[in-house]
Length: 238
Image (cartoon, rainbow, N blue to C red; front, side, top):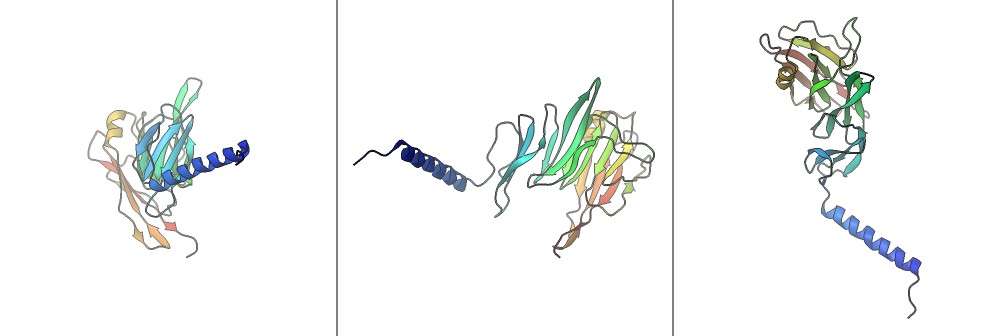
């Protein structure tokens, strides 16, 4: 019998490697641990590699998704809720250091893409700041800054936010972002630690639904205060 030509041997070896990889993936369809992992479990994980943030998601009978979620840098803060990720990316311009805020889904889509940490309010424009702490429920994000600001983002909301307790100013959203309060005299570490975000689980059907969110915090001068704000999701094809 004549010897196999080198090209044929190479193709056969490649086929064996591919078959072995496919078999391994079929045996473990969940999201495996990764070098640089930040948060997650076997159903959803996020990790960094180089200057990028990556995610893996696999729920129920869905196909496993592994993709780049967005930029990452040393000093980034990252929080994960299910398949929703919120994170910061540090920015330095001369002597000014700040954080930009991002929110995205592992399966695709973003609601925040490098947003300034302090949203606009009335005649006051948005401004740069360092983020002290992030919290996330679904795609809704809350955060505090090292300068005592409290902010929130609720995508796809057609409703006005309402105050919980005695806020310093009436809540007025600009688009899907809201500066809840600016408390320059507050301890930023204590303020961040007190931040809580909760959703009511949602109501509706496969075509339209709404979820109410409550963001509260301890201002350090009295009872907890915050805002109630809800989203309104309408799905195409209904």
